Amino acid sequence: MSQTLNVRISRVDDSTGDLPLPGYATAGSAGMDVCAAVTGDLTIEPGQTVLVPTGFRIELPPGHEAQVRPRSGLAAKHGVGVLNSPGTIDSDYRGEVKVILTNFGRAPFVVRRGDRIAQMVVARYERVHWQEVPALDETARGEGGFGHTGVQG
Image (cartoon, rainbow, N blue to C red):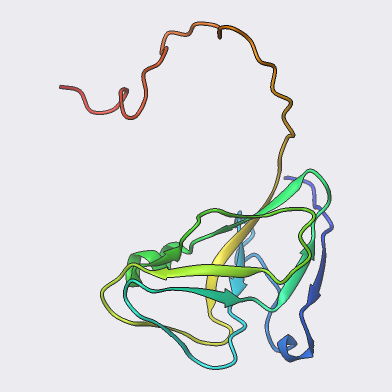
């Protein structure tokens, strides 16, 4: 079992008190469900992208990010996904978390207040210091990429 990380969270204002904060649906969930804090129904037309408020802000500790990811059910059933997936929320960002939803489907999709629209995973990351060198170590794979280990023939 992994350790629990304490993260500070606050609501944007009192109007979001009826909405659940991000939370895990099951004991094995990696991502927390994130709900829409829209004031009324929001219709996303086919091909349209909208920025959906969530009603909360977070204070991540240094060395952590929050990744906003699509929900598989919305993608499979409605063709709705998170455009910049995963979207990254940096540890020094203090604004409202918003989700960039795109309707890739063929029918309008309606987002209602409290709908689960995305999932959020909090993860550690490492900062990198580049060490420029004239050449890299060789590997068996070498420069093979973009599907070279996939379909044969």
